[in-house]
Amino acid sequence: MTWLLAIDTSTLTASAAVLDDDRVVVENQAATTQHSEALLPLIDEVLRAAGLTPAQLDLLACGAGPGSFTGLRIGLATAKGLCFALGKPLLAVSSLAALALEAEALAPGGLVLSLMDARRGEVYAGLFRLRGDDAPEPLIEEAVFTPAAIVQLVRERAAGAPVALVGDGVPVAPEIFAGIGSVPAGASATPHGAAVGRIARARFKAGAGDELGTATPAYIRLAEAEVKFPPR
Image (cartoon, rainbow, N blue to C red; front, side, top):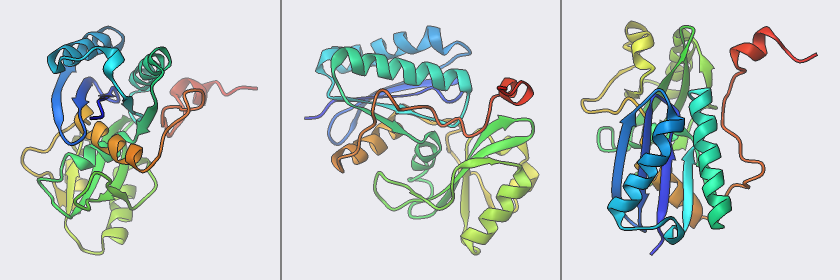
């Protein structure tokens, strides 16, 4: 049995889950504006519910973004710290891919456009094909887009196939996104730790892993301060 702790802090919802080889044992979410205060208690809660101590974990997974810059830094730093202290491997997972995987029961075998609010009227976006396993197939490079730009790109790649829309980026421009698909009833607006864990588990079985010293969040774009005050 392989015990996996998976977290995601890419949005204003912190999520943590414990998985064994083939199932999600426990998962919980907490709405928060302070991941630094909410994440460790949430991790402690799911570990206790699973009847585990941190030392019993075999690996840890973290949603690497894109999303909230502060949330991503806190999430990955926490995961790295636990991995270092426990001597366990780390797997960083696309939060957009995790969001897409959650829609598998709503759009089996279909296309899913994951959209996360990037502010400034833009969205972080990734288009995925669900394949009936724990590895959504990316069809475009994840990036930040205007709603019109990502709709045009999806029209080209989807070639008329129906597209499920998921994520808290849909409300950024619902009338524009309605031109390529719809939000399935019950779709999640934020990535969950369970989906992060399922993707990480598949990568781990395939021999993948991430170096603690070099793993970084997928910010995708520069922070506003970096744009206004570039290094000289």
